[in-house]
Image (cartoon, rainbow, N blue to C red; front, side, top):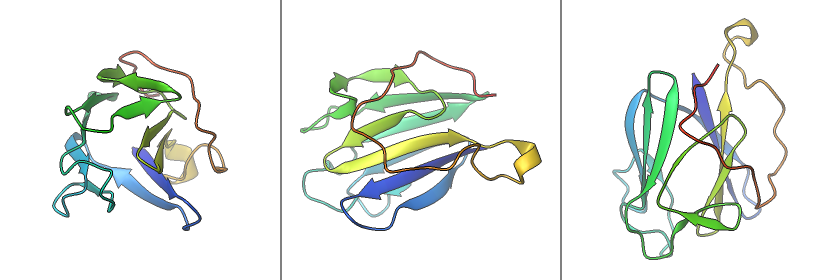
Length: 123
């Protein structure tokens, strides 16, 4: 299982499980990950979680999707990667079966930069 922790300004972070398949990130309330601010496109980015791999694609958003300071079009994500969409930070964590589904490490508020990944298998 993969979890996504969403950080926004001084709000309490929210952690949600990511289901296999496609998840749309955007301002539209029908999106799987809803980011409610005008600087996020209605359908901003797409996550595809399949066969223990996670791929992020920007959907030609107006303000971009970033890993660190690098605007991306499509990128594989790794455990611990943080992406930035507008003033939201989203951190991706792989969970281990022996921890009862809890993240494998304690999260602290991420910095804006992070390592970039390739199409990567989660373990």
